[in-house]
Picture 1: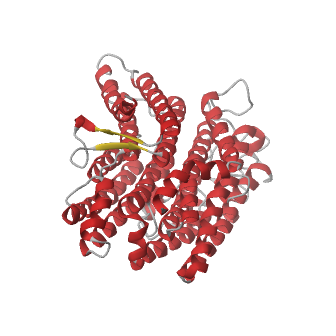
Picture 2: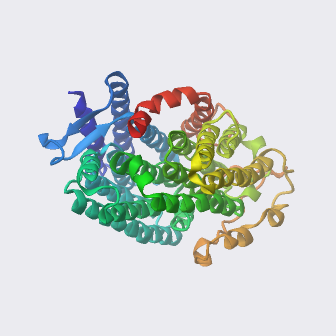
Picture 3: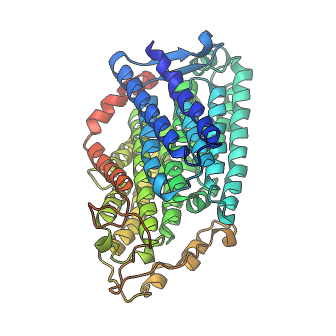
Length: 546
């Protein structure tokens, strides 16, 4: 009966999403307790699924007793379990931040639980059309959550994401339609078998289906040049929403890209269609460099790390297209590591904004003296994003780089070497903006109150952000938040009424600070786990490359 755990993981958050609205008719603050119980239950179920997978191997559940390929199937293996655990951990930890940072309305928590249910469904489904359904649940709830603070800027960002996301979902669905025409089935494993037995890897319908699916997912992942929704969405969403969206939404779409490519179409399809694989590789390589360069031009912290995500997901896209075991292992490790790092980075940025009103690099002069623990965790996470060992950021980049070089030396042409070079260039760009952040934390002199010193030299928002709007509407993306107050010695002054912990000098609440510290520790601890991670994902990789 352990297979019942799979539908429970999906059903629990979706059913729980109805309770804040229903109980809200009587209780104004029912949302957070319901969301806390619901996400904690999902975390417990995820742990049980992981234990079952480790002990007895992959397992599945046929919904309604209708066996595949006719029925809808939920499947758990080492890859899906790793992403499921990430979803569960981040969704619980983000709630601790949302409780103090808001939004606090019952509709917000209903949408939050529905988002968690959509993400879990994307991770566990074994059916291509069902993946589309959960992709849409995730997208629709994300649009609503981004606009949760009801400001004009967040509404604009949400609308922009809605338009782009709808196009992406439509292209994905069109690709699924071509798959069904070519194979007559939608179950992932059955599609794989039917492509080999009937259609063949050179069938125009099969090629078109993969092209449409990958293009649709690229829009959801935010690969360059279809990334323009992401910086606005991350910047303008409430801080707690940015934290979960940055850590999980594009991550789940990147997981879907890996799953569809290697479980449905297989590595043999990529080998037989070098043009398609090369196109994905070129787009991903450009995304690696462009995302990092644009990130280095920013001074708003949320926009900076939003553009950073464009580069990081470019690395994962390249790992998928390289189609060798080392690169794919690196892509999967980087997928998990990126989710943890971006959760911690955006949580830390939100905590500094909550406690000190600081949202730009030039507002952070010597903030480590006022908030040493928050600043230390952010510095550690930033260095992990650069790829400084020991960190999971280093492991992911190393495996992808080695896989790219192997592909180039094995006759894959110069594109493999170009990917490795792009990762190196991206790392230099990442080091440049993370070094700016660390320098502001620890080495920038705190000037007089109201003195922003090197704002012009560091690239004020009016210059840097406007230069990096990718041709977008500067009125919509320009960032002109008021400068935060400073103390007599020039340090960032705590926001009046900001929550604080009695355990540390940081003017931040205890529970989110603990979550931030755990995220920083996890990035370092997993950096020591290269062999363990390789062993964990070995069953999936062996199946893919057998």
